[in-house]
Structures are given as C-alpha cells and as structure tokens.
Length: 84
Image (cartoon, rainbow, N blue to C red; front, top):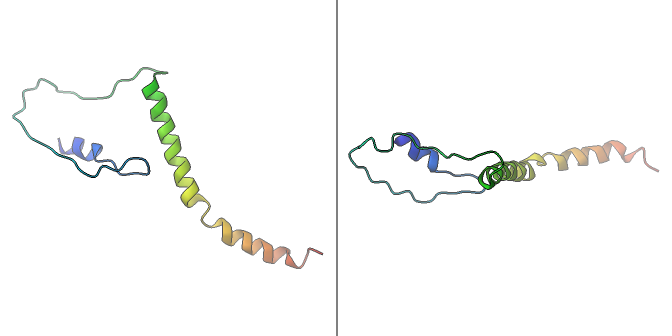
C-alpha cells in the first residue's frame, strides 16, 4: 500500500499533489490488482503520451538552454576581431 501511495503522490511540472488522505481497512482480497488499462489509440493513451512529451518540453525549455547564453557570449568574443 505504501508503494501505491508514493506512486500517486506526484510532484512534477504538470502535477503537484498537495494533500493525500488515506484510510486503512482490513483487506478483503476483493480488489487484489489495480492498474490503468487503455487500448492503443484511446484518448487516455494519447493524453498520457502528450503529457510526457509536454513535461520533457517544459524541462528542456527551463534547463536545456541554460548554458546557451554564455556560449553565445563566448562566440561573440571569438568573432569580434573577424567581423569588419
């Protein structure tokens, strides 16, 4: 159960779970397995894929270009004497 709670306590660019309530009962074995089932091409599958790609894009936008400014500044210094 603790692994499940950790899995749904999501904190990333798109989702930030701020509160999670849990209540324990005596197990009845009525629901031994829990999983999300989606067929290929269903909206949920496409949304999951889109969300993953969006998270990647946000991460790259935030951190991927961090060093780009200093590299461009350095390139400008290198080209400074060569441009008339």
